[in-house]
Image (cartoon, rainbow, N blue to C red; front, side, top):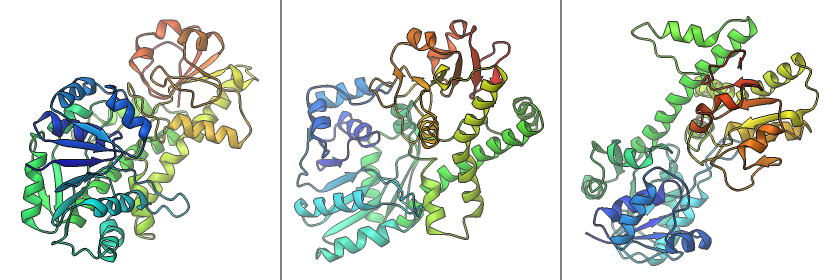
Length: 408
């Protein structure tokens, strides 16, 4: 089997490269970030994830290499960021396009470029194919395009790489089956081969479905709060119906998937993606809704200084160090716009200072606050409710069972 060049060594690219290498495939990982590459070459992973260090050790033993350079080989897997433009909600495909351009500078005739990055439906037709043709390549002869969107969740990446089904979108069945064989080296679940646009749409639809369901729970929260009803009790009882499964509300939606992918459909299909747009607005409004609850609790308890408020949790989900699009950061941004600075923050998984008044010691954090707002249900807080029982508590995740806890 050919050597594989994995381009982009972030939350998706690195685990994919390691999984391939640990299963006997020759892999070279490429990233423009020299510091990241140097860290990997020094034998250290670049983010925390259960099982990642063990997989890294296995891949290194199998000979994986890391570099800032693209190599000449038959197969490339591109896993670079695909943000959206906040002004018009359309995808920014520049990272993918630049990666493909770099591939064309070094690849042999007949190479396959697999785009793992999540893209909006039609992105490959609108952005990738034109740049390939503009550079004199004939698609299907000089270069083959495949879309194999990732489908893993931070906090459970290694398990899901192995056990989640995958989708391979390709122009030809032959190329699709060839790439399927590569992913089957580590993926034990079903791998479906289809066309590229279907693969693009499927990934975005998966995350949009989840976003809409979360939005329903969050809208219920607002309705119940307006009329003094217990949303958690209502959801608990409603879910006893055999065909009802309402999710739990929360302080907002973070991460690079659910909080971003639905905007691709809103941006590309204005006037058609109406439920999707409403869901996005509801979920994006939750950080400000939580700020309103904080303000109400402060008034009720005579707290006049926002510096006596502490936000517990900067990551977007529990027990990971991923802060992308996190509700906590959205709240801090909103407070800064309203000149309401001074709130204290703490997260056991975030080692670097990314916010003002950020603490790295839980005890010091607690000493300096009167109201703690649980934004992320890390295992640490679940095991230490006894340490916060003398505080006012706003629990946005419904995990604290102490008496007198406020909820959203």
